[in-house]
Length: 517
Ligand code: FAD
Image 1 (cartoon, rainbow, N blue to C red):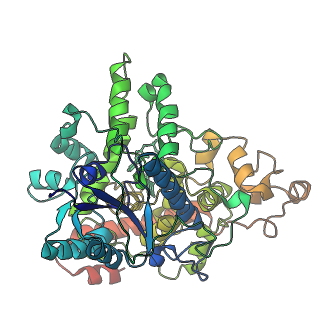
Image 2 (cartoon, rainbow, N blue to C red):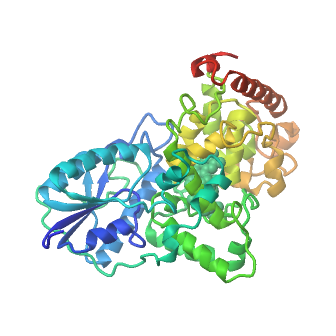
Image 3 (cartoon, protein in one colour):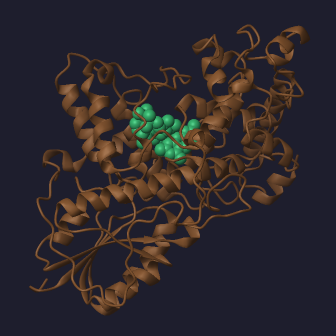
């Protein structure tokens, strides 16, 4: 690149300074560097018709988390002599306009495998190539490059974790030190007619500030991510003995896992840096757990889902998705879906998890298992895509590849097929939290229910319900279905659907398969 030229660093995810190859490349040899984030109103605009505060796409907690991450990024850029330039509008149009106005010679952004970004990036890259602008778009959101793994596997994504591990091997960057520091950044030049703003507040985006108990306790940003990472790994024994699925899903004051997922989702934390820190811990302990159950193994699960998602057309739907079983989910289920989404199924364990989702935007992995199983093949037989949509909107760590992958898994539509193994909405939570503290915290209406009844309050005698100031059917709902009969019926339907899938695969169209009951 010639001297005196400008680079544009387009932040989307990867909201960090550390281990950010796109930012590093953008800053090298440029006289001017424009660090840009585009607020897409489509993603951020309040939607008054949505079932809870937020936009059509994202709940308010995730929008707030993103804004906090941007404020932190801006502050970290300022320490390096720059700042974040925030613009609003359709991202591809805004970026193309900036490239033209600022006479940019080099455009840098982290490669993204999500279909939304693939389409966006194609437009911007198309313009850059006709305008003779260099594009640098490295893979740095994941440990491995999903495209390379798929290529190694003859063009098909590996469909099991073990085959993924075999193909992946050791990450290629592990032999070279990760770039952790940029000591200064070039200034940005004249911003001409482009309207630059500070990072907006949620109120400036048109939201009313939420009540304190509806605000997620997890704060966005790289600084918070690195602090949380340090706290997670300082206890070497904890890291060495980490074993999923062990761990208490009802622990909420001190969660049983790292809660680094929202930071990884937005790239406030580099997954490669996280992995390297874990390898360092492993070197300093006598024994440690291994993938798939170790903490490093969790990061590999993340990469596994990214790879399958990238290599599977229509990964996020049942129809047309070759790796997804075709199951005739109920379609007259709006009431049941709403009861599940709003935490009023009458099963306190399920409802408390769904309230934690609404209030915190995060729940433990096994808690997610329980509610996803309950909605789909366990009790309600509602389509996994509907549950996926609810998670996608409300999770602060909502991630296209991981969320869809796990919904496919939990609904026994792909990856995992033991549909007879169902989580009990009563006994599963009780194993971890016999007193029901988690339920009492997220469902205060049940706070005085004696522990004998807290998981099945409908069985409490009326006198007990009166003393607990919680009459079932009035203050807290009766169960929407009876688990014993509902789960039996679900198993029967799953067996039927599996048999049809087996018999008819290749013989009839998917539509016929869905319509055959
Ligand atoms: P830790 O146990 O500390 O793990 C560290 C990191 O490993 C996580 O931050 C995450 O990036 C990754 N990881 C852990 N478990 C998984 C997994 N099963 N699959 C892929 N990556 C994993 N995770 C998301 O990040 N975004 C989602 O949208 C999402 N949706 C889910 C939907 C369902 C139905 C289920 C069952 C799970 C979903 N998960 C999702 C996976 C998992 O529950 C979360 O990643 C995890 O609970 C986050 O907490 P943590 O950061 O403390 O995890």
